[in-house]
Image (tube, rainbow, N blue to C red; front, side, top):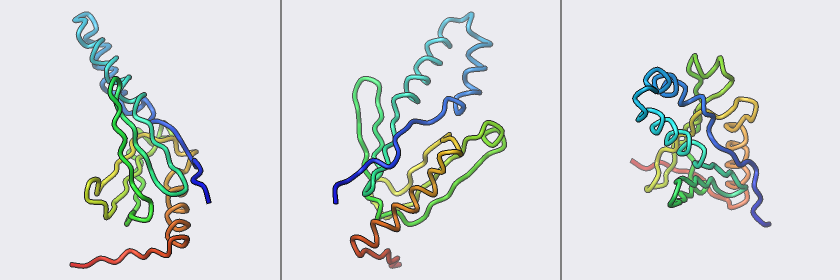
Length: 139
């Protein structure tokens, strides 16, 4: 069965709201304008792609780096909505995995309407069933 894209997107710019306000207050110094622009580009160029088998995170403005997490390695999934995020309809999704290179994946400011946490959980269960993989913790 070929791998299909389930969801592809970026974080909301609401995560930079405080920085943008601060930069607007000090815009007469010119430097904060470039700081705000850099943060905007960093957020816009960090792309999350959830497929039926993995989660790929591509980031970088000039040079691109892609981190891949096989979904059957996901141990735990947590969604969080701080007060300001809840008022703007966005949430954070944190994944804990058994992957040594990226044990924690933190996806910030994703719109709640997407229900990314549920999509990830559904794909994790499906790929574990398909590959007949079971997560076992050994201490």
